[in-house]
Structure formats: structure tokens, C-alpha cells
Length: 228
Image (cartoon, rainbow, N blue to C red):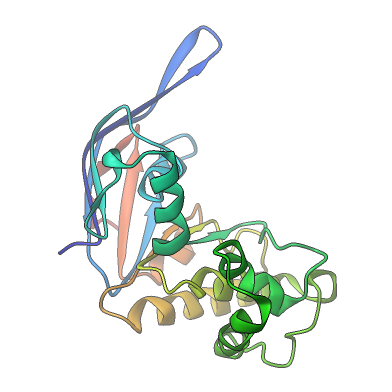
């Protein structure tokens, strides 16, 4: 079963007196075990597509199934539950809590899911070691480089063992070498499980080239999905 099955997605937003169609019949099928990038010009609908796949937004029409779940059937509580357990998010600006240590930031989704710090810590530390930061578990974000903070964010995205990882410009604030290291880590995350999909939105064609598949979005549609 594909991890993502999207058909004829339409999503419109109101901007003043105008309506902007961010998605205009987008269709896409994605399998697990892949690192996939979504590219296209600014305003093409890339981030909107990512948000719909992650149940952060809902289409006005069309169908979207992720990990076998029909997202259109979910109410707000069920969508929140879906995001918490089935999707990991990685952002350009890391979104770490500055007052928490690195391992506590990794453990945060578990804490929000009612787990105790004591129960969450072993897995959080294991993931910190997985991303090469076993010696930084007690550092706060202010004591870490951008690349280290992004590695913490990647570890956090894995704490709930999700089927899909959604990364929005994960190398946008990193230098080229650090960005390459983060991309290599994301590829490893995708390839370690045949069921897991890592889907990355990027403006960087160089970053896209390291992926298994490149999906191009233009004018709210997926065009030539296997183009590079």
C-alpha cells in the first residue's frame, strides 16, 4: 500500500477580496522506503501540499490517504492524534524549545502524549546517539550549532516512530557542508525502513538531486513527477 495517495486535491485561500487556488487538482502517489523532494517555484503550492499530507490543513475537494487513513474522515481531535503518532515534522527554523535540553526537546512529543520524562528519556537519548549527538544530550539549543539543532529536530521527528517524515526546507538555514550532512541523515532515515517515507520541500535543486525521487509542483499541480 502506498504511504501517500492524493487525487485531485484543491485548496483555496481568501486573500482580501480574492481567492487564491494553492492546489489545483494535484495528484500524487508515494511509496515507503524513499527520500522524496518536492520542488517548484515560490507560490507553486509545495508547502500547501505538505500541510495537507501532514493533516495540518484540509483540501476543499479531492481525496488524500496517508498510511492507509482517509484524512478527510478525521475530525479535529482525530487529525491531531494522527499528526502526533503517524507524522514527524522537521522545520527550517528547528522549532526547539530554548529552555529545554536537547534530549528533552527530542522527548517532547512523548511528553505531550502523557509519557513521563523518566520513561521518555532512554529512547530520546538513543535517538540523540542515532543522529551523532550522544555527547550533546544535556546542551540547550543556544549551546548548539545550526546543524546540531537540525539533528535534534530530526531525532525529535522520530521519537513516535512515524510512518512519514515531512521536512520543510530543512537545509535552508545551514551551510552547504552541514546541509549535505543533514540530507545524508534524512536519506538514512528513509532507507532504514521499507514503510517509512521522508518527504522534503526545498528550493535547492542541489538538495533535491540527492533524493530518490523528485516531484515538481507548478501552479498547484504535480507535473512530470519523476522529473529532476
